[in-house]
Structures are given as structure tokens and as C-alpha cells.
Length: 279
Image 1 (cartoon, rainbow, N blue to C red):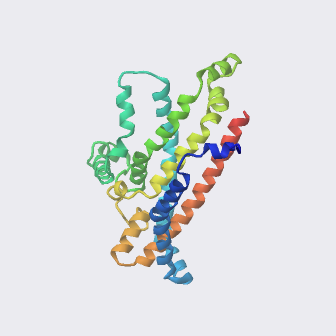
Image 2: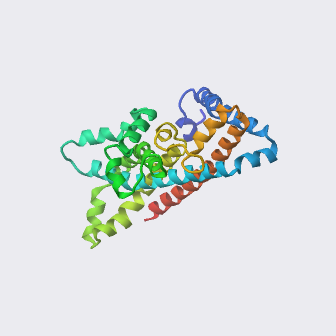
Image 3: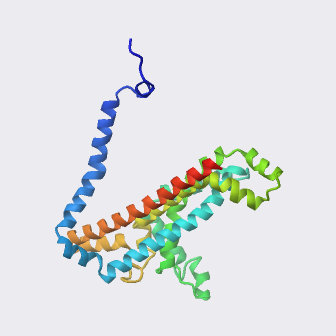
């Protein structure tokens, strides 16, 4: 009898059927809509495509969307790491409540969160009226957009980082301390390299989520062209004017830039994981 290889033995029954279903499902859900996006945008031709995606209004929306998404993901990476560390390493009254609050942006409809944030940070809102005397305008400004993106992105960092921190053996920190390392050195040279891949993953997820966010931003941004208009809102405006090719061209450019950024972050994540294994 021929001995089965480890690769063959590792396969689950029905592999051919399941991989076929997987490819068919992903093609219908992902590849087919993306192909239609390419086809719609191709109707403009190269010159028309370039003219649409380089207008000053569109470029301003690109800068705002990518800049606000990057800033919000960076803020969430810092404070999400603190929240995850607190939930994993400490026991305190109300810990389960705090842990459940992290998932609130997942459960709350984005339009509802946008209305709530706009009401809270408006000049007459609870927080907005405290910021107004300081000359800080939160609602209907770029700051308001960043606030909304931070709100919807924080769960991605916390939930991605929590398992990595739970798997981190506390004895490693004790060993570092016994060798004379300070807390800052232990954090920088021991803990951070080990959780960096998860931290970059959380950043990537928060960034991708913020980049395509519409519902929570549209109410607090003010939607002023060239100032507080994000790309998803601009695409909606093009669709309402029956400019389907222009909307597809803007969306396709957004998709290409997002893929390049995500590939770069994934490369950094791969480098960080290799560096962590060599420590």
C-alpha cells in the first residue's frame, strides 16, 4: 500500500468542493463588483479618467480622506494599545462593562453614531460648548471627521491586540527586570517587538475601516467642498447626478491607493514579525 504524504493526510475531506465554493463565492462577492467598477471607469477613456480624478475638488477630498483616516488609525493604535493592555493585565470593578463598551461602535449604526457625535460636539453640545470658548471647532470641521473615524475604528485595534497580549508570557517581563531592564526598556525591547505584528494589523484594519466610512462622518463633517468633503460623500454626489463613470473612476483611484498603502503596511508587518522571531 502506498504511504500517504503528510500534505495529503492534512487535507480535510471535500477539499475540492470547498475550494471550488470558496473561489466561486469570492468571485461573486468581490471580483465581479470590482470588474464592473473597472468597466464603468473604462468608459471615460484615459483622458477623461485623468481629468475626473485630478480635479481640485477630487484631490482635496483624497487628501482629507487619507489624511484623516491615517491620523485616526494612528490615534487608535496608541490608545487602543493602552485599553487592550488595561483589559488584559488588570482586574478592576466594571472590567466587563468596559470590555463590552469597546464593541459598541460595532453594534451602533453608523448614522446613529454620526448624529450623536454631531449633537455632542456641536457649538451647543455638551462637549462643543466647552471647546467653543477655547476657539476649537469640533463639529463641521476636519477635527470632527477625525473624531468620528476614531470612534468607529477603536474596536479593531483593541480586539486585534488583546489575543497577542494574552499570549505574552509575564515571565519574560520578569526576566527582563531581573537582568536590570527598566520598565521603558522592557516595553521597547521586549513587549513591543512581540506584539508589533498584531499592532500593525490593528492599524491596518482601523485605517481601512476609516477610509471608506460614510454614515458617521456625513453628519459631523459639514460636507463643504474643498474643505470637509470626504471621498465617499463625493462619490454619492456623483451618483445622484447620474455621473456613474465619474463615480467609478474616483472609486477606482481610491481602491488603487488603498491597495498600495495596505501592501506597504503588510510588508512592514512581515518585517516586524521576522524581527520579533529573531529576538
